Image (cartoon, rainbow over all chains, first blue to last red; front, side, top):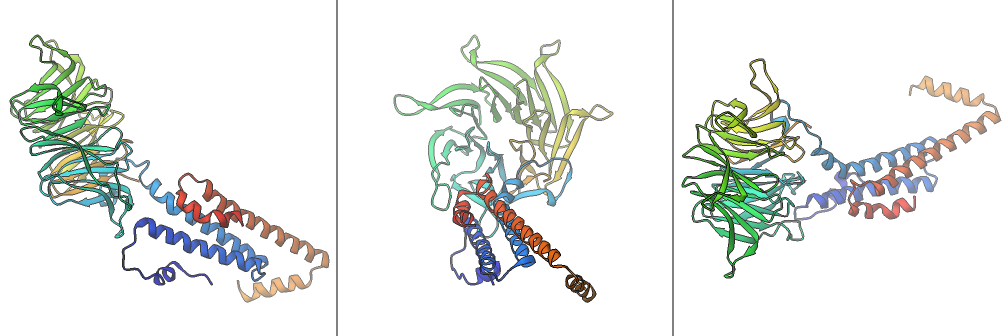
Length: 410
Length: 67
């Protein structure tokens, strides 16, 4: 009689904890042994007639079981939904970092998240599909930045991350791995910003990075160096105030920035200059509260902002009679909106406000003309990061207690 | 299956003609062959499934071929 899984593992004493791949391989080998056993009994004539039929039916079931060992993880992360009040049942991934999670973003493939933590100064890349030997989400990268990490984002190819810390920007390669699949971080580029970097994002082509620092926005080349081998700053816009948000437009020809003290949102051209030779300001908007989040829509015709008390969607195509950008949607969150991002389709916005994450429709409005909240999750702590997955079917959030969660409804 | 059902089947078989028995045996053989084909198809589908890793496919390749 063939052995069961439990017997198989009981006969394989090993001190070293097994990886998920090793466990899976052992399961397949155990199933293969059972298939071989049944087949041999049928061939020896020990199982005939109805018993042989049962034997073959068992082999069919075992074959389907083997397929599901691999398929399970694939299906697990595709085609989720974001609707209604989300609870712990809607948590696909949960990871406890060692302190305030300031940044949490999906990889372009949607199979990983990068998180940056202020207190333990770590950057981590966590897999959504792989588990470690304890059955926990596999941490593919652990990088000690040495300083509080304020920003962390994947490159468009997903092979690098950019981070913003207390005094610098770094681009880290994720390409090198050890035999267990753990990433060996390599710093590809570093730029001393002369102050803390609270925003850092790749350009759509991945050849530049925009950073927001204590007093300016800078666009840094990742392909060029000056004659002394130093990083080239391609564009700079001085605000004299903390730039909390800085992001490229989908075309990469503009940058949106949000500032703290003067509460301004500015869209800055990277191709046009003003009469003083400075990057041309294409749009300016006084938000009335400090601006902690500012991002372009996928079409590049709108920006979403998160401020001290609300989320707003501002048109870049329309202006009022005074030449100011038109507010297309506004949601009074009743508290500080730390994170605000468009869905990949541009029809929704996710915000992190107070201790909750909300997904807000830009297509539907209630009878009072206010945006409809499609999904909500009480995070139990201040939500400092909130972003959609590339498919728009999940969100990743981070809070001040170091909790990182990927949410959705499978 | 209850005792009565087993007895009914035995009684039914005992009253079968030789021709009926031959047909029944052929029918069982066909069903065994069908079950074998189903099992073979299921095993072969592992090798063609894009969601199954190459490593797992390799572990089963020989068994599928010899099935």
